[in-house]
Image 1 (cartoon, helix red, strand yellow):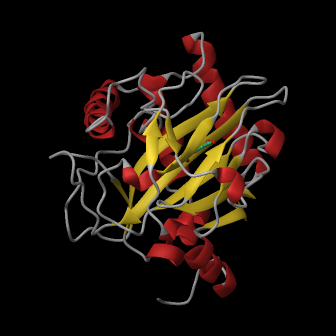
Image 2 (cartoon, protein in one colour):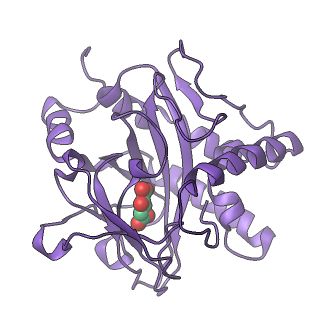
Amino acid sequence: MATSKVLSEAQVAQYREQGFLAPIPALTPAEAAAARDSLERHETALGHPIGPGERSKSHYLFTWVDALMRHERILDAVEDLIGPDILCWGSIFWIKEAGAPSYVGWHQDLQYWGLDTDDLVNVWVALSPAPLEAGCMQVLPGSHHERLDHVETYHEDNLLSRGQELTIDIGEREPATMALAAGEMSMHDGRLAHGSGPNTTDDRRIGIAFQYMPTRARQTLVEWDTASLVRGVDEFGHFDHGRVPEADLHPDAVAFHRRAVTALRELIYAGAERESDPSV
Ligand SMILES: O=C(O)CCC(=O)C(=O)O
């Protein structure tokens, strides 16, 4: 691969061996605060926190989420890991309210997404402080080299769509903690085992995750799926790129987003025991 843009050789080697990097600088504090403000102004207009219908693939709904997804600092780091032709398959807000019991069960992302790539980088950007007490992500270093078994618990506090949980005894491993300040990001391999506990602080824990992958990746579970071309060229055309929203919640944007999340729900629940309240 050509000279790296922002990550050192040691960081790239750590990512390959251990499956994650954190913390990495991404947004300035002002950019993180502006993104949080945009989200919370929308929530004020809604009268409630952003819900399942809008929290996934929201880069098709909001200009400011599209801009975050294409942020140069994030893409430079992603390019160092997977090369210059990059699709973003998804964006998703991960919000834990202050003092809420919500948690994320231990899981490996790529077991559910139907994507045939081994090179998916999941970038989680903190829009509020995310220390351990706020329920930041934890990971099992090196677990991206294994394929681990999951059960579906549908536990009401588990933020995952099927309440997934790994069946291994996490206590026997040594999790690493990816605490982040607002504006920092973590990067983890799509096969790395990760999870997070409840937020015991008195502020919301707000993150937005973006899933980046090389343009050669394919979707195997549904015929039609979306992924935005965020850098380079797409010589493969396996995904509908969608479009940048003309304005926040523009009717065309809302219509395209609805199609995109319908396909997402179909693939997320393919083979599931049942559908819970959708978290997608
Ligand atoms: O926000 C969290 O705690 C978990 C996020 C997650 O599972 C992911 O980004 O894949």
